[in-house]
Length: 176
Image (cartoon, rainbow, N blue to C red; front, side, top):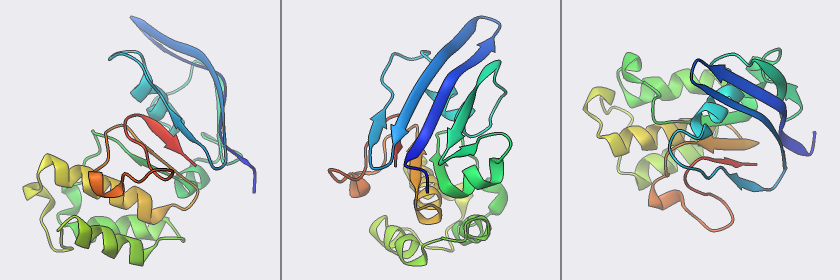
């Protein structure tokens, strides 16, 4: 396995009134990297770019040694993402969302998923449409954390119950 979890090489994203980059960054295994900046600086845009939301004007992104565009499925199997705009209503219930994501991740951790559900006072049969904003954030984190062993990424602060020194961070971050 490659010891580099994330590599950005002169990545550029262009919009009519904003250009992000060029950004070059290397995140080695075992590290926590935070993106800090004011609103509109491009932190979420960078995270979305890593996971293939929107095209790059130039540059390259590699996750766990895989090209983020050419090897998109491998990237998504190895890196979990939980952002504020993920939408799960189409699955109807928590267990259906878990079943769908479990099918994409051969390393899905049922024990961790059950532990997080219990800690967060959620049940598999809960209707996603009735979840609070905080519960939807927890569901996004559960789906990212239980499905991936290599690295996690999110753009909203995680619930207090998973903020543990040396293991998790909050805000825009990459944890490998």
